[in-house]
Image (cartoon, rainbow over the protein chains, first blue to last red):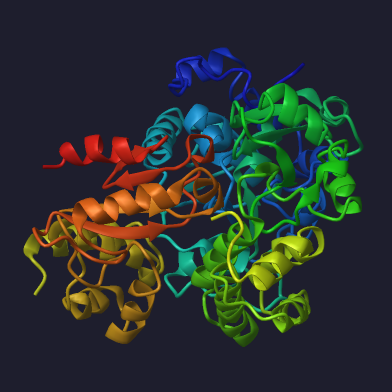
Length: 424
Length: 153
């Protein structure tokens, strides 16, 4: 099984040096693109690879790129931003990619920047990723020293600057337009769309924002071709995917597997099944802002379309398992408290609604719930749903809640009827 | 007043930026690195950045890791997100609170530790997890908390 993203990582978890990376074929994609491909040909290869964005929303990457103005009349400077603000609860894949192979990300940035004729690129990294920061800083310096980055790179006519921006907390910074405000030195509140960042992003200029894992795929697509990339997958959506599992399983972790691997295979073969004494009840497939999937969804393939058909979202592809010894109401309460705290406060439904939901769930969990609370919670999943808020934080927060109200209805009702949490 | 050192570091940082306010997080962090927190010198930082003090304070108070109040010598960031919660975060938190005799958001009486919550630390395979200053700790249990705190005596 091919593992382009992680196959050449070192067993001791140290980052490969520039020399090691080059010996494993590193920076060949950049050479190939600069010397033998037009920017349009690179974008075309990405389009044909069927790569979909790995940050959670799954938008086709090639299509996202196609909205960037090209040609001599395009506004300048153009920007590229790597969203490395990984903070979605239960998600731990980008950290692995950055710590394990920083040059792969840098090469992905450079090839993508060339395709879109970008002038300045930023890596937007959360502060807590200290080891990733250290390794990226070193790798960026190495890449500058060898003229992979900088002025007229590798003897071509193309120049590109790359900077590492280290942020200072707050989940909302991972929202693409809030992230742009943060980079400009403003409060990280989301912007209204349209205009989209591709036409009016950083300082009003064309800006592409993609996730770490998305960029890491690009060099491999350029070297091996779109057809090869599509062939890595079990389904129509090209490539491999970094999947992860946390919760009460024997071997929590992350693995690079063909896109479209089933939930069951990931849980049983890779995470080695449930820990002794714990029984599986449900799984959140891709970070806290995705809906629970029950046991009968175990054979669902983990790609964007299949998980959506099953009533949830692939999201970040890193699953959180709910076991029989964990209270589902308590689990949902934990997530809604998180979303409430992390709301930027800019729009009313999110700011007021999430805290009301968290308080109501707190009351139910503490045995102070009223029968009508469940109806109120259900109404709120609509009020805070898509279309009523500025960004997708609150609609995302409603996904675990509405699926919990559906699958664990009896557990909620027991809390209210018995006036206590049956798990305590 | 900013110290000469702080001023110099901020001005050096500003050279990298076409738009001065873009350097604000880094400028705030420079002062925080020297003082442990960002004091009301924020108005002097704002001046260097071409921002009003209120604009900069609006940004500073938005971020959870820019401290506008004094903190202890060590800052504990405990992950309270869902994977850590499933894996026993509450027991770890209880032990931290009882050992330090503080609640979340407080600083211990000896000024040694400040305890703060943090969004998912991205080490869910080692849940529950926390950071103390720059150091990450995973696979926490109440017993391990005792051992770890000893290192910071």
